[in-house]
Image 1 (cartoon, helix red, strand yellow):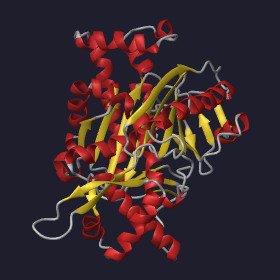
Image 2: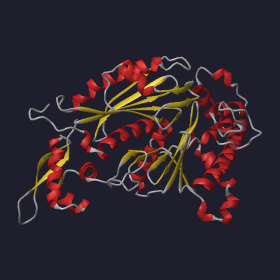
Image 3: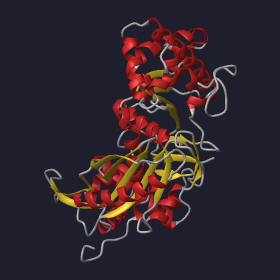
Image 4: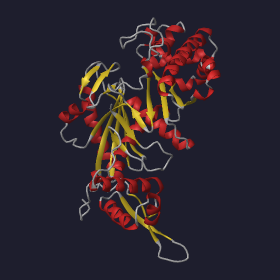
Length: 436
């Protein structure tokens, strides 16, 4: 099983790790050094500016090791000294360290049905560049998407590296988030939305432009959103759910992700967390996935339009317009729209019951249109779960709404790119003596 491990599932500021395939224990001197560099760099990223004495106390490493590790991080250009702080009534002032801006950069690109949404950041996490454009790809044809991605990487790189010293900047990673199952070799196994099957997007991008030589990660867009919402919840509340489930309705379907101990679960076929395709009635409507009665056939935007007596074909060219009309009727108290969402809530309660019995999440976050309709959905869901809750009240998850909205996928992908550097600072070469 391939999992995306991004951070340790700890409160904000706690050092963590980011790997594909699980957390590896250090087995040799190189692994120990890499782990210790990561501990130090993560602490500086979370709490800098900070002194070497603080780093020793926080990491448990001896001062001699801290001296050597910080010298290596300075030599790589990842951190720099930014001044002095008083050490108290006695002793020399302490030299403070913080992240060096613009040394390593990450570009994230979110692929949607019609658009590419992109952003760039350095290790600070601040968005330094953002872009949104049509890709013009026909259903089933990835080539226009590939060409647009190559263009975006060059435009973003030229723009974002201006945040630091151009001679020292390094493009650490390009993260491409797609709507569809991504299997172990990071091939897009299936995207119902885009009409892609077994698309090796990374190889296509490299073939399109061999100068894009940095690491490229292909990830599922809903998994990135789930990770971003998980981290936002931890940062906001200080609570660290052992199991966290995220579901969202967007214009084209229902996506989601499952985070366990800080690890986004992708499953054996890249399909873990696909809550929209949990069958809630085997005798229900046919679904595009080939099954019947999936959650999306009751709670997806198109399904809600049908249930509310609206013609979904009228909104095919702009499903968002249909969602707005449904929302208007719902808030106006239209009986058909209210009944449609009540039916959707019952389907959601059925799906959540299955998720709770299998994964036992402590926290369920509703995103996208689910968050907008939470005042109707949550009471209905809780009503359907009331019988089980009366018998086993401690089994009930906390249900809340998202914190990041439409930015969740992009922010998750940016953070993932940064985490790969924080996890392995040795991936960044030493800066030459002339600054190159």
